[in-house]
Image 1 (tube, rainbow, N blue to C red):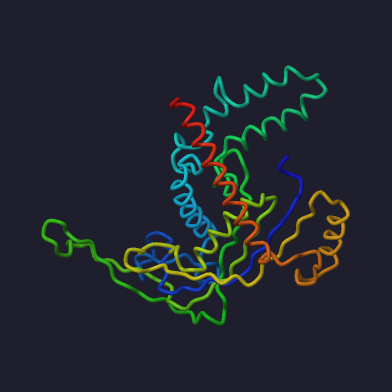
Image 2 (cartoon, helix red, strand yellow):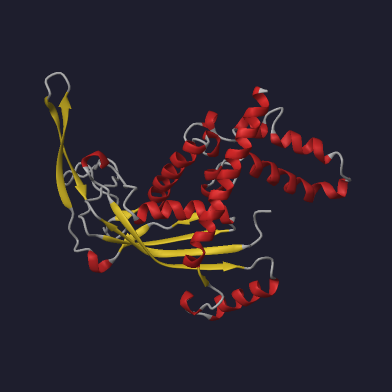
Length: 305
């Protein structure tokens, strides 16, 4: 069910640090240098892990969805709060047991193919919105973000060093021996942004459009020291390349031929401008959420009657 190509959205752009950025690599073991250096690539250039960007975006979208219905966004850090925990999947009364029970209605030769379909349907039906897009232990992520690498012309090989100190809460003065320093990437540094979304529904793409817009409007900070004003970033999306084969084998064959024959994605004519679909995708999300609110209200009314 998951391995059938349906659509693909490729997003490219530039992420600019509005204020200094600190994504720490942990405490340094070097005898000379910063106590808390930033993450660097193999060439010593600053790097923003794709997981940091993706995690910050997921957290913001989860907060929005919980404001509508707490069941729309599970907590990925606590198994007890997953939409499908290990017991629900593998337990005595779990999904897998339910599927095997339902398979008894089918002939033996049909069960293998039907097992995957039934399991997939049950997982999707019980998985929260954010996990459908960003992934869970039972479902692959549809949204992939590459590590953000430096735009060479904006980087001059220098980091800023800043001092920090722990405060003694009793004396309200600097705690003895708690002075430290940390590295930050200067404001105005730019990073290349590349992300891919595959096999997403319209409302799932709408959810991602809202998340990306939060980065475009400087609403989601990255890294540490955010209470000090660090980590404010701005995303500028340059291109959104969209291909939807829509169960059209001929369209998919043309796309595959262009992929092989083209040296650049700019030469692939099967792509459409994804920016023209943003309003449609966002409206699909709003409709889906309103439907969820309506269903929740109906269920609550039925239970109270």
